[in-house]
Image (cartoon, rainbow, N blue to C red; front, side, top):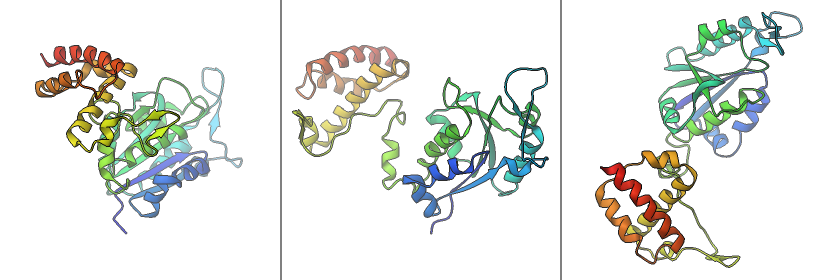
Length: 272
């Protein structure tokens, strides 16, 4: 069994939500093989009352309840003590945090012990966050009922970057966002489905043409769905020249050629 490459600890009110989701598919296999490690701590275990409540009414009034500083602080300290010699970061999952992306996933994958603090209700007493939180991360501009789903998203994205988690480690380097573009479309058998055929270039065995076609498709898809990324994308003049020739070939449809020609204007501008 390989040495564990990263430890995840989740502080939550709903242990089963974390264990069930992390115990399936690729994450479950990585846990079983000891490549990643999961620890779940129930914040209610640190409650100071007989009813195991960890929330109270907010000072100053307002709707909802706030998670108390005491139980949260104690749970965080317990988590930090699990691997005292490891490089550790405690993350509070919150809509007010920096927006999670692939660059942050890479950054976090270099940490030995990631602790995720999952809030509920109207949030957590600010004093516990001031004492314990190292980072604040959001998965998007919307509000969920708790931090568990965001924590699962981050753990999944980070785990895929850990060597050995994926069967084919090369696949992680070819997916969306890895080269600043969205991923190209994928195909498998049969060659024709519902009168739709696999593009001829993918059946040609010509690896250079396939790579160029896939790059063109990534550019077209990125321009269509994430124009903000397209505006930032820069490539070399040699690649631009190859793409220009591709736009005159029979490897693309007329619609794809039109889209690629518009993209080439952006690429030439970005290369200046």
